[in-house]
Amino acid sequence: MRITGVRTFHVLPRWLVVAVDTDEGLTGYGEATLEGQSRVVETALHQLGEHLAGADPRRVVHHWQVMYRGAFYRGGPVWTSALSGLEQAMWDLKGKRLGVPVHELLGGAVRDRLRMYRHCNVVEGGALGASGADDDADLVALARSIAADGWTAIKTGVDAPVPALATPGWVRRQADRLARLRDAVGPEVDVAVDLHGRTSPATARLLIEAMAPSAPMFVEEPCLPEDVGSLAEIARSTTVPIATGERRMTAYQFRDLLEARAVAVVQPDLCHVGGIFEARKVAAMAEAQYVSIAPHNPLGPVSLAACLQLAACTPNFLVQELVGLEDGSDLGVGLLRTPFEVVDGHVAVPTGPGLGVDVDEDALVAHGYDGAWTTPLLVGPDGAHADW
Image (tube, rainbow, N blue to C red; front, side, top):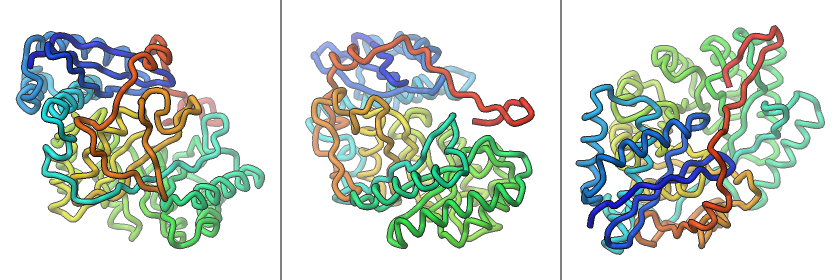
């Protein structure tokens, strides 16, 4: 089997899907979305496609090594996102050629179903929402609705932008909101909190201490992820589990996090970290330190398909992120000929070959756009730029 071409699709609302064609008529799919930079990633995909032309896609790890190590200037979000999409597509091809799901090629399933979590935010003006009672009531109602549908985990956020040193009132508003969510869903539903790297280490410590009575499942990105020392200090200052990883690429960038014992949950994004096998390496490193993995995925159904393959065969898998699709066709209806089905907050382990999904290229074209999606900007009350 030989690769004959690499094609790309920008798909609304912001996804970049890559198709790898072969001389046997099989096509493998991957997702290489890098929010706000997908047009740049598209260029990298076609450049890497020149290396793959005529190659056997079943040599997944070999091609990854050549494309990553052969670049001399290794890594970076653009290059590794392109690598991730191509790597997923090659695993998809290998599984389709052999007639087995990818997880079967990585050791086989270790569970029967995969636990998912939903976002629980009332978005208004790019933030979680104002602190008014009406917005909190909407948020509480949403949490109750998600739990009533059988989901056993949700994730919420905090008001943004976040001041460098938050006032006691701001901290108390966030903690009180989380307490209301906890009361709404009860003690058997997990509630995670995403700080999105918006909080300084000092504010994060104050906020996590105030939120601790509500027993968050984890607090995500309490500070910017490159500050491993502060992450480790935060982790040692609380009994609340700390999670991070969506903005780290390759197993090499997760090593210092784990060596510093800065996290209880690693969150590699399979569209950025380097793909399925690289995320599996991160999971294995984490497993040796009794750290869980919860793959990051705010993206499309091809990304989710790759995540589910990893989750199926990974012993220390905790929970999988799943957001509703912005076009209203939840769970990939319209882009996948057979959508995912969530039952009581879980998805069955995929059994189809490759990534286990049947991508509808006509739908990719129908939902296409030019790829010009820009990361939203936040501005503080003084007019200065704030971290999104």
